[in-house]
Image 1 (cartoon, rainbow, N blue to C red):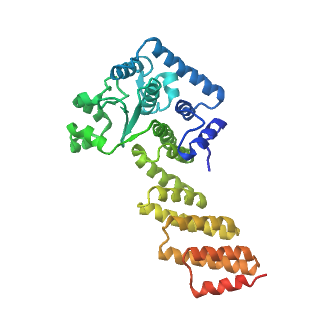
Image 2: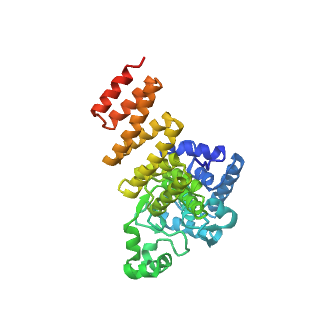
Image 3: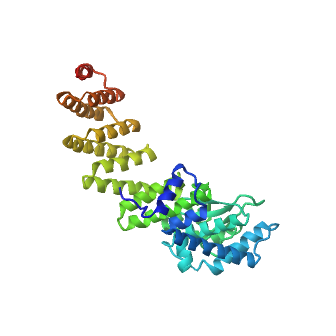
Amino acid sequence: PFQIYANSLQESLAEDIGDGRLNQFSLIEAAFIISGATTEDELEENIRWYQSVLEDIRSKRLIDTFEKVASAEKLFLYFHTTWLNEYQEEATTLLDIRNSRDFNCVSATILYNLTCDEFGLNTMAFETPTHVYTIFTNFTENIMVENTTSIGFNILQNLDKYSRYLARYYPEKQIYHIGLDRLYAYENSRGRQITNLELLGLICYNQAYFASKDNRYAEAYEYVLLAQNFNQDSRSNQRFEINLYYKWGNQLHRERRHSQAFTVFADAVYRYPDNKDFANNCLISFFSALRQFWQDKDWDETKRLVTEIAELNIINDRALNDLEKFMVNWTHHFYLTRQKEQGQEAIELQKKLGMRSEKWQELEKVISSLR
């Protein structure tokens, strides 16, 4: 498969987050690597820039440990007057902010949240199907921050004004159906709190989105796999993720890369077990791959795919009958070529799949008789 990890930094980050936690890298380091820092020198340069931002904040004495809300607002205004110049949908990384001062909701929220945390203003984020906000976890009052507008601090104080701002991101018909006064409630009823680690996954998802727009589906898929290690349940990316599974899996199938198509659709089935289309596409790719492997007499790959599909629990009676024919052919092949070990592997797989007819009992006997 296509690999986005073109350098050791990205490979190391992918390995570090593989268990859903960061041990080797800090959040800010991970953010810069995902954003595009490709070498140790680039990473150090970006960390020095970030440290200079922190020093500038300290020199301006914006943080008062006894006035947390006021400090958070001052920090918010500091960014909107110094580093957040223009909203751009594609400005999703910290490098966009550093290099051009362009931003979107993801990059602005990450910069604000990680900086707040540096000064003891503990943050989380709130992710909805269309947006992401900052929320504070150690304040005495409930404060939510919209980072894409300079009027966004403590938006709960002025929901009418904010609802009009939020309406820019909804089709007019949908606003009419929901009601402008209920737009904020509608948006947030389908969201969830996420940690700042999960927040970093949204950069990966956005990178995947822009790659997909250019039909670079392999790259987009790899970014999604990385994103899922950061954020297991991204509300704002479910629709995109589902569409990408369809597009990339179908392209692989058209290109007769059936084993890879099976892997993509199997992943989709794990993520969305109630999606019948994914299950059907997974079975189609599975049998297409089995035919290729039979022609190439590739038993190892056949065994791998059969083992994987058994774990998916999507084999219906018709599919089981078709699979039995493949397994009969393989077992006869192993008998004729006197490959006892492989024949026994085939028999064990058939038992695992529930094939216990008299036919298989006879096959097991002839395979066992091999010397």
